[in-house]
Image: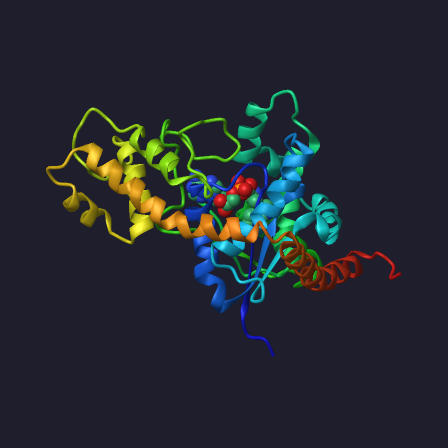
Amino acid sequence: MDEKKTIFSGIQPSGELTLGSYLGAIKNWVELADTYNTYYCIVDMHAITVRQDPAQLRRRAVSQIAQYIACGLDPKDNVIFIQSHVPEHAQLAWVLDCYTMFGELSRMTQFKDKSAKNADNINAGLFTYPALMAADILLYQADLVPVGEDQKQHVELTRDIAHRFNTIYGDVFTMPEPFIPKTGARIMSLTTPENKMSKSDKDPGGCIYLLEKPEDILRSFKRAVTDSDTVVRFDPENKKGVSNLMTIYSAATGKTMEEIENEFVGKGYGDFKLAVGEAVVEQLRPIREKTEDLLKNKDYLVSVYRDGAERASHAAYKTLRKVYKKIGFPEK
Ligand code: TYM
């Protein structure tokens, strides 16, 4: 009998992976991988809620597989797959659409943000996005969902949907918990530290990408917005830029905020920004090098995601069959 609990998490291939998605999510996926059954997905079906260039979307999905592996996820021990390869996600999403309320979806912050940014394309998929996300999580009976702060609301809605369904039909779904890191749950843009670092924003210099070259990373940190003060002190209210850089430095080195404050007593922001940039470069260097290697072997990456889809389908089919039976669909 398998005693291990289950993790599900995913990232949209709607842009290149960023330092935000690494510190907010992937780093924890790797840390939790040994003690859980893990499903890590490239959620391409979510990505089309905003218009995508087809060639870019395809390329990014495969590159994301390589980056997951390069970050330390061994495909033998972790199920790594592409959402559109497992049709049960769409099938369960439709069922859950019928158990998710209009009012609940209207309150979702991501929907409000994305509607504002894509005013000419507020499509139905953008609105029902959280029901598809609930399907992702509930299909695998996940206990834990490691995500950044911005996704907490969606995981909480998933719990409400699961609870509603279970109240009617008995214990069909496991109740998932969000897992939000203490440091790195919300990495902000380096140029506009009041905004989240986001892969889909056109914010050159504000965003650090996992595959960026060291000199570009260092340049972005050198230009990062700080304040007119000169003290390295953690104060997210009044010193947004500096506090964000401290968070990144802390996540990259394991140092506490107090240790960081002491390290830079009497030193200027120039030294501080250089130290943060160098720490990030060193953290990302092996990931970039391994990804570049893996991308030379497309056949291997294809074999990883095919095997992943097969293993994911096995679990997903089991849950979907149970759901169909409970709601009264005749068996085939
Ligand atoms: P997405 O693709 O926007 O982001 C992927 C993960 O990275 C985290 N993240 C951040 N964490 C800290 N600081 C940041 N600046 C930052 N930017 C991104 C996100 O919180 C997320 O954990 N809806 C999800 C994808 C999804 C999903 C799922 C996640 C679809 N189905 C099921 C978990 C379970 C999203 O848009 O994440």
